Image (tube, rainbow, N blue to C red; front, side):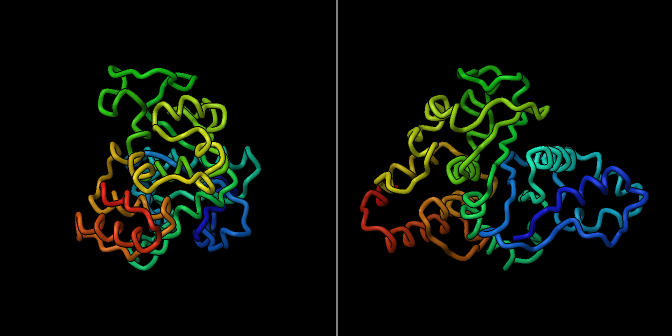
Length: 270
């Protein structure tokens, strides 16, 4: 996996004039042996892989436009938090995958559950939470487009990003820490319908049916139709090639892969 060098990113931001344009901010490393932090978030105006590695080679007006983006601010704040917590390496899906390469994108999506699982810590950034405490009650006025809870809880990809990591730390829109997965497990269970035991110690040994795991994703949304299936692969431990453009066929392919892997007829309910 490609990981951000936290120190290199922050040094470049601190002293852009003195930074060598050739200095690398991303490095290919082994997720099994590297200690790294990882970000979980809702996408907005983001900074991609090509922009991240080529920032210092851009004309000044273009570089300034990238640095003003919501997504760039998120990268910098994530790096600052990782450094504060003692991690040199950080993974963010927006800028650590070269999505121009279909093979790299496919590898990343098939590996993503493992990458979140192997991270020492996951930062869950709730960009629509303004308070300095985690929302403990449903609020349909404040979160009217996401079932009364922060939008992070209705996105497809964030389901595995909540379950897979050992540690999940939540932050509000101003990067104020508002709690972690273990202490918030009772509230998170109410929001997501995921049992507290799964939230605190993962899926292994829980004896859950395919239908039960599927039910956690029932009300979640993805921008691309195919991602409804692709975002569930890691939860079931299956792999399949990415075929963006296949639409709802992706979910049928996922069902077939699950049937091959499990002797569980509950999948037919979906």
